[in-house]
Length: 232
Picture 1: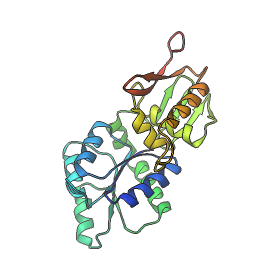
Picture 2 (picture 1 turned 180 degrees about the horizontal axis):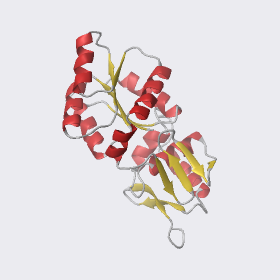
Picture 3 (picture 1 turned 45 degrees about the horizontal axis):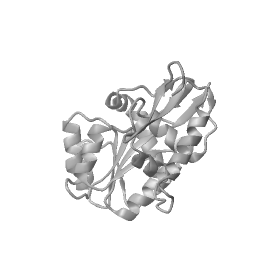
Picture 4 (picture 1 turned 90 degrees about the horizontal axis):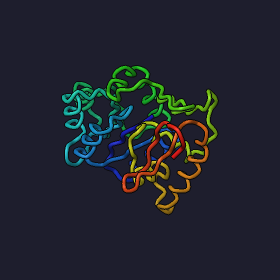
């Protein structure tokens, strides 16, 4: 699952990003409303977790502008506001569900997956893609996050899985090294930046013979593409 998390509390953002990544989700985390709206438009995710209280644009304004612009991605609101009126405003603005703080991570995950099941058609329209992506001998099930090689689950470590999921979600498009580092090592600032190159190397070896090439584009990042002729 490709998830956009918009939360301005640094501690909660880091905790959620780390916990959701461990549950198999590729999380892009932002703290500013305007930046979140720009990211949403540029790279529509499978779902958005949106806090109501944000700098720049607040969560309600972000949601209203996204819906006005035709973005139909499922949205789960996070709010510490206890009044029914705030929740009604959010739902009327286009939110699909809400979860008051504090909440349980298991419930958050369950609600997100339920949103995807109920809103699968709209999410697919936003991403202009089907639920499954096939490239070479690989099949990536977007809803579950599973990756198969010749119809068998691919043997990957959690970090390799996070990297490959991110690249498969944007086939043929370069993903910046910095973004990959954030998704593969969420909240792990003690890990050296160059460690992402080790994970790329291991994934590239495991892709040998699959018909899929992991390419390095100097200054741009990494991308996946089907092999044609000799491997790059």
